[in-house]
Image (tube, rainbow, N blue to C red; front, side):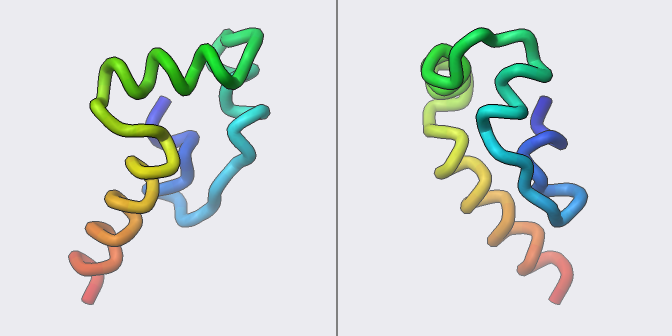
Length: 58
C-alpha cells in the first residue's frame, strides 16, 4: 500500500483513489487505520519519507 502514496515512484496519487484501490469505502477510514498502525497520518508519513528519500538521493 505504501508505494501508492508516491514516495518510491515520485508521484503522489490522490488519497481518494488510493483508499478505493486498497478496498476502503471511505478515505476517513483508511486514514484512521493508517494512523493507528503507523502512528502518524498518511500526509505526515508521506512528508517524512519524501524528505528521507530526498536526503538519500543527495
